[in-house]
Image 1 (cartoon, rainbow, N blue to C red):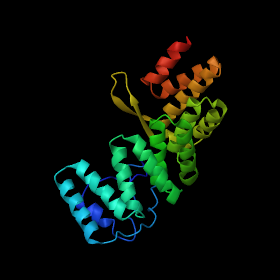
Image 2 (image 1 turned 135 degrees about the horizontal axis):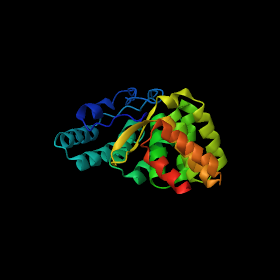
Image 3 (image 1 turned 90 degrees about the vertical axis):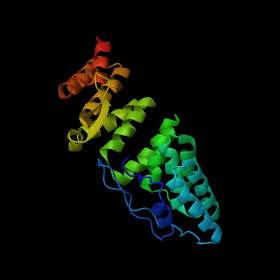
Length: 248
């Protein structure tokens, strides 16, 4: 994920929530622009009860009891409902554990507070897609693309449009992608013939998507060329090989 803050269950992180401002999100090797700093957070109210929950959280994290740490987060949120950092940490816990339904609900709550936050948008998009709510995922990715203009996000949009059978829109975005030089260097991951994850340049995936769209539109010649172009770049690209074989 390119915008989401790395989640660490640690006492230092939870104590950092008391600061008036969040720190900028850390990024993995980026295919997009770095994340903007998160919006200002309401400081934690340092009441005796909150201090108790902070210590509970710290001790649970120290002993790797993440369910208790999660419970402490809920306690802290009840005491500090306006603190976005606490909600974000809870949402990311659910995201990391692939519990997409609660992650989506919390992400939507966060987006209601900060509609242009890249972290919240990406979590909402990924969770919506994982839950099969593809139209909602598409909306979030479209908003994310308007804010970042990244090829990875545009590829997600194009693929979701294809999945929703919005072929003309998907093909338009594929055409835009094929004109962007970044797709010759940006990397994506698919399984190779040995079913092991392998790195490919994004252009391979974009050409394969073009072939799928044209195939569904009945343009077998155009689809064949797109799959062949993908295989010129990556002769072992399984998806293009299988799609090409089905055309014959």
